[in-house]
Every structure is written in structure tokens, then in C-alpha cells.
Amino acid sequence: MSAVDVTAAPSATAKGAPPFRFLASELGLIARRRRNQAGLAVLAAVPIIIAIAVKVSSPTSSGGEEGAPHFISSITGNGLFVALAALALEIQLFLPIAVAAVAGDAVAGEANVGTLRYLLTVPVHRTRLLAVKYAGIVVGAFVATVTVAGTGVLAGLLLFGGGDVVLLSGTTIGMGEGLLRVLAICLYLTACLSALGAVGLFVSTLTEQPMGATIAIVMFTMVSWILGVIPQVDWLHPYLLTHWWNNFGDLLRDPVAWDPLRNGLLSAAIYALIFLSAAWARFGTRDVTS
Image (cartoon, rainbow, N blue to C red; front, side, top):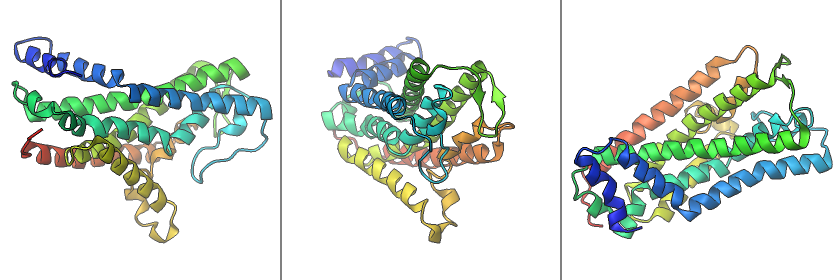
């Protein structure tokens, strides 16, 4: 990645080019990084593995984390549940790692390769730079989630077929509505992961080592998961970043259980607001030397 590549978009925008040119450049950089491409391949491999494992073993019981929706046992009845099972599993670790990799690299990566200072020599305000970086993280979270769900749907339909979908509440809906609910789940999880991305963006402004930032973000997520299963601190659970993530299964009820979903979105919004403000305060006054 050359300095010319990095600065072309912001300088062009300053001269009156389309306003989304800078964002398009950022998304292109994220998409071209081989580690991100490898990460998407791993995310896509999990639902395929799940589908093949269920096909060859035909399990009769479901498993998973306490509080998480159990979808494994429903896969043989409708391949759509491969996507749901994969999301339930990957939201525990793989999806947060994918978001952490993008968020940790957002600012720290530029500082590490020496392009951050050069970026700020062109007429790009630091607030706008942070906004573009965060937008890239949000898009990355959506792409990661849709990759898991899309691969799961394709693998499931190929191996098990489709048809009517039996919801967690026992109601039966058509395949089309089932796909729409999967999309709604992807949007909900994107909002949750975007809150983690805000945490990651703040951490990325604190260091010039993207790998260190990524590890810190993953550790933050793991601590949240661990605290969430300790009954002695149950008063803390509703305030943890990951507490509401598994409630995406409520979108598969009839009627939809909106209260937990609203709480999850509110929690994500509060985390995003706090850590984006912290990132802005830190980056706005930071002495950039790299």
C-alpha cells in the first residue's frame, strides 16, 4: 500500500470529487488485505462444516451455549437452519475476531506503516477520518455476518432442501419470510458487532501496533462473555457488551419478542456512543508522529 494510494481519495474529495470517494477507497483497502480475505474464508467454512457434519451424522439433539438459540437439531428439517446455527456459534468468537482485525487496524495500521501523518497532511479533518474508518468497520461487520449466513443458506439448501420454516414458537412461515428474518438477524448482529467496532476504533487510537489492538479487542470480548456466565455478578450482565447478542433468536418467534432486541440495540448504541466519543477525544488531540 503506497502513500499515493492512501491519499488519492481524500485529496480528490477535497477538490470536489464525489463525497463517498474516501469511503470507497477505505473499503477497497479493507477488501484487498489478504488477512481479511482469509478471515472471510474461515467464516464461510464454518457453516459448510456444520452442514456436512449434520448430513453424515444426523444428530437427534441440539447443543450450544446456555441462553443461545439451539438450531442444530432443526437443520435436517430445513437447510435454512444451517445459517442460524453457524451464526449462533460464530458470534461467540469468530465474528468478533473478524471485526477486531478490521477495527484494530483502522488507525494503528496507518500509524504502523507510516501513512497516518501523510494522510493528515491533506485537507481531511480528523473527525471525518474517524467517521470513514468507523463506516468501514460497520460495513466489514455486515459483510462478515452476511458471509456466514449466506454460505449457511446455500450449503443448507443444497444438502437438506428448503420449504416452510417452523419458528421457535412453533408457528410455520414460508421460505421467503424465513429468508427475510435471517436478513433481519444479520442486521441485528451487525449493530451488535458495530458496537464492538467502536471499542476497537478507540483502542486503535491508543497504539501504533495493530496486532496488539486486535488482541486487546478480542480479550475485551472474551472477558464480557466470561463475566456473562458468572451468576455471582448477575447484576452486571445487562451492562455487558455481549449480553444481548444471542437474543437474535427472538426474531424467530411469533410474535417477535421485541423487548430483548430493543435492549440489545440500545446497549449497542450506548457502547458505540461512548467509545466513538472517546476515540474522537483521543485522536483529536493526539500528536501524530507516524
